[in-house]
Length: 216
Length: 392
Ligand SMILES: Nc1ncnc2c1ncn2[C@@H]1O[C@H](COP(=O)(O)OP(=O)(O)OP(=O)(O)O)[C@@H](O)[C@H]1O
Ligand SMILES: [Mg+2]
Image (cartoon, rainbow over all chains, first blue to last red; front, side):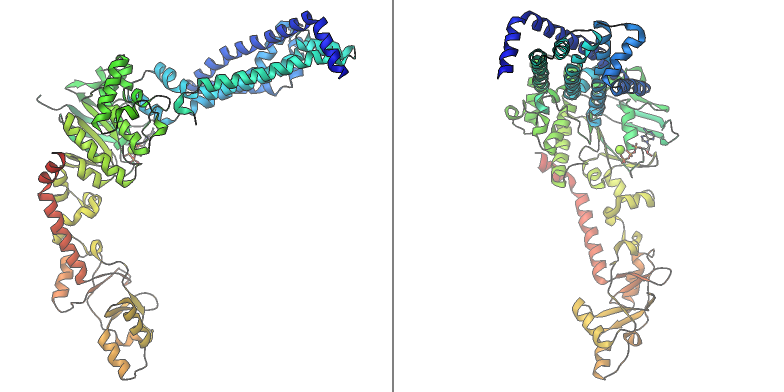
């Protein structure tokens, strides 16, 4: 009870700091996710056409996710990017690639061969096949990939404070340094809310983008 | 229009892996014709069909469409001028029925309004209530209904030629028959040229104006269903036409095509009482007696067994067996008739090279053969009146 009160007081007295950390957090999630979507989806689509490309792409994405997240952050520093927001964004971006690549590929490859054959036989161009057949049918799976990438990124982003990128992780570390549970909670609660929010929103998006004919 | 609508000239296809799927395929198809490609699995039917819309490029020869080399038309353009129906149906699950039917018009940028009225018109044509179906989705339809939509989709842009690859292969027999009738009716109503792939001879005989029978990538015989039935070119054709063979003269039918394949046989050392019992249970008046090794040794007739029983004889049924004339599976049925007319009326056993019994020809078999032949002949002579009624 006391703890909640203290946390609340901290929120009130340091609202500016909490809001700033949250905004940083959003930045740390939004930018790498945006980049990952922009890079991974087209690249993977390309590798469904140029099959030789898929091997290296999925290998790389896989490797990035296999490296323990903390090690990935440390690697950024070791590679000479120093500390701060940029290396954190790069690390988070690399980390988010894998679910998006995997789901985009599986989604597009999973489009029924009969449907594609019929479409080709009716005279769709290569672009039309992608835009009006494959992507709409793969969309749900692709969104699910983005969703799991997002949830992972929100979690990982709190670690970015370790290399000086700020964000809610900063508050948590500060609280731990000062042995103040209320400050730790002031960082943790928004982080948790963000994670649930992200998942919930993506769930909605997934539903909204599923064509009626594909709903069960 | 003079000449042919679609002309294959020495068309061949060798796949990159060296498979020679089609070779020397030459055929003229006329406006309004219903041509069925048929043949055993892997004989190149699908390959031939897909070369027409250039989903597969021929490795040799040319196809002329309306007298023009089809390679002068871009594949995408070409396909939008043809209709295409496949066994897997391939409706777009994310599009409404109306949008599925008018998929090609949409590619051709026909207005939404015109497309809807076209879909409406086509649904009415096959007796599906347009207002109930237009805005549904493929997963809300049965397989048969889906393939109906698949056929309508191939008609929506009014193509001259429609390609169909085993369109009804995945449907149950009832549905299949309905759709066969419907397609035939549609074809007459809109006078389309249809190239239809199947490996079901029944389907080919009902639907085709002309049947093209293929084997290992080559045409074996081309002809109307009537010609195929009456004058099969060789044994392969005969065999492929299968149970429709009865139209042939009895002089050409071989024993193995008509014989009973599981005649009652008993071992030679079977006791008399048990033999009698076997006859009673199977309701036969004679038994084929075989040695332990299965080779044929003769026929035993009911009166003989009864007499021996009355005399109190104790022996195996083999001792009462009488030799008789036998046939080989490849002998003509005519032969069987001769034997039966010349004093062996109850039947003629059929034995293979190693003297094992493989069948039996009886009077019943021959009567059945005759009946079938008469029925087929009758059907073949009056198809026009039948169909006229149907489509009236
Ligand atoms: N893409 C391919 N690459 C190599 N060989 C192929 C390819 N497609 C088909 N073939 C081979 O070409 C031959 C003809 O195939 P096709 O599909 O035309 O036969 P089909 O008559 O349609 O058979 P089915 O009745 O089983 O559908 C077969 O031997 C097949 O294995
Ligand atoms: Mg085939």
